[in-house]
Length: 412
Image (tube, rainbow, N blue to C red; front, side, top):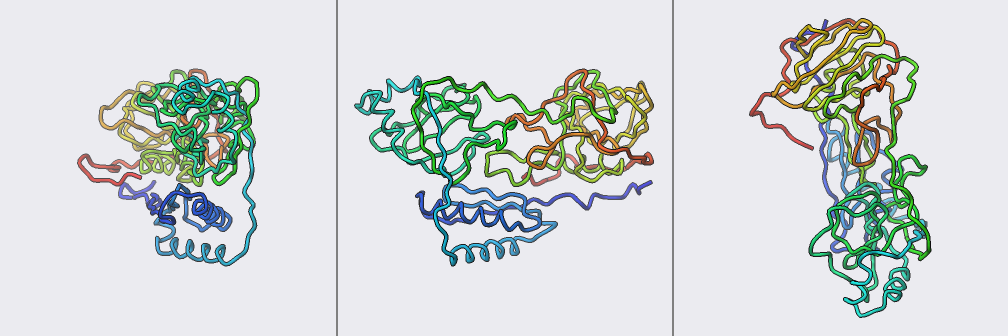
C-alpha cells in the first residue's frame, strides 16, 4: 500500500513563450513563420508539447519537468539558422474551396462598395489567399488579402449563430466557419466542402500557410459535422455500464498535444493532480483514459469484478449504500453500483478503471473535445470497456489533499 505521504512527481509543469518574428502582418514574414513551425515539427524536441504559428509570432509550449526554456530556445535558433541558410523552392500547398455565393450580406456589401453583387463575387474569387493562421474554432482559417475594392468592416452587431460552412469576410480578411458559431463577419455564401470533419482523413481541409482560391459554383453545402465517437460500440472487455449519467461525464487523458495550430484545444484532465492520482491508485500510467465527472455525478454498474480509483473533492461517492472516502481505490463485484452526489467542495471527481478505459484516439488523445466534435458525454446505457486486464491491490491516500482553498495555483 502506498504511503499516505506520497506525492505525485509526474505532474506536468506546462510553460510557454512567444517568438516575435515579424514587425507587422505581411505574407512574406508569415510564410517564414510557417516554414519555421514546419521545420520544428519535423525535428521534434522531447518535452515540447505545442507549436502554434500566428500572424507575427510562434508560440512554443513545453513541459518544464522534461526540458528547460533555454534548451527550447536554442533548438528554435538552431533550426531557424538551418532553414535560413538552405535554399528552398515554393512548396506551399494550393487548395480550392468551392462556394455557392448566396450570402445574406452580399446585397449590403454591394451597396456599401458601389459594385454589383456579381462584381463583389468576382473580386472575392480573384486572388490566391494566404492562410495566416487557424484558430477561433477548430479549422477556422484566417485568410488574406481580400481585394481593397470590396473591403467591408465587421458588422456592428455580431450574429448569435452563423451556420456551418459559411464563407465570410471583414476588412482584408476572409474565412469559412467550420461549425455553427457566433460571429461578426459579413456572409458571402456557403462552402461546398467542410473545412473540418474529424471523421475524414485528413480532418482539416486547410493548413497554416496554404494558398487558397475560392471558386463560384452552384450546389448545396455539406451537412453539419457529426461528433466522432471514440468509444467502441461493443468493447471486448466490458467493465461498467452507465445507469444514469451525471451533468457532464467525459473520457479524458493527458490531452491533445501538438494540435493548437489547427485551432484545437488541449483538453484532457482539468485537475491534473486528482486525475493522475486516480490512475495511480489502480496502477495505471498517469494519463491513461479515465472519467472526469463534473458537478453532478451519475450511477455506474459493474459488469465484471474490477478495481476503481477515485480522486477529487467535487463529489460524495457511494458503493451501493456504503459511503466511500476518496482518494481511494475499491474493489467492485458484479452488479455493484457506484453513485455520486455533489459535495459542494469543488466540482470534479476522477474515476479510473484498472487497465484504463478502452477508447480510440484522435490526434494522439482519447480526450473529449465538445467544441471540436471529438467524443461525446456519456449517456444512459453506454458500456465502458477495459483497455487491458489488470490485477491490482486496493490502496488509499487517507491524508492526501490536492489543493487547499485559498492556495494560489497556476493555470495554463
